[in-house]
Length: 269
Image 1: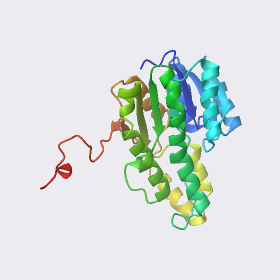
Image 2: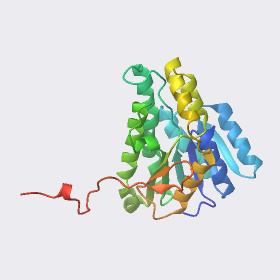
Image 3: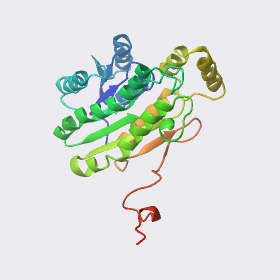
Image 4: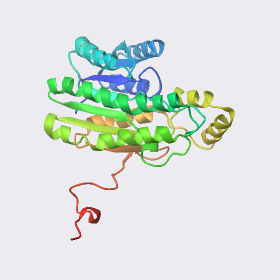
């Protein structure tokens, strides 16, 4: 898809990866709807986009509310005439202590925002894209969705769910000309990293500080560039793109796939 002249809706766009993506898409001719529960951050993103000559509008949306999710899609259609690109980026980590000691309300919130809200967003976005003859949906998963992640097992489980959902929705391209993909970043320099660290107990905070001190952080713009690549690449569908520091973004294949000559899928009568 050529992004120029298209309309995008980005959740969690009040800071970090969402803001960087809003700015990059606007630089490439996209009208952007900035959705976030943080009104101050969302409006700041809009002003940042407009400062470079881009077009953007803010809508307050809590992705855990289905009413808000439906309303942000309706706002996008009313403001810019339709929806071509959706980037489901809003996410959180689980505050310490680590599961299974984590409070139920904390790990439930992680699942609600990081996985169930993505499902709800896609369900609301697809009909709007069908009205336009197709579109592209991208979600933020994580490198933790492709491997074990011991610091936050709940976050890893939710992000594995996003990857599985993405890979399982390839059929939308044939049915509705809608491609569904996800990005799987490593540790990115975003406010979320600092919030999880600051909201943790002293032991978990010390562990987080040690991890962050031992590795370079990825810039949000790097993730935004991969999102733009997935929008442009009409062959990308059901793809999970791993993004780690110092390496080009790369597609990670599922370990098994129906329809391929996989010995594990053969009968042994």
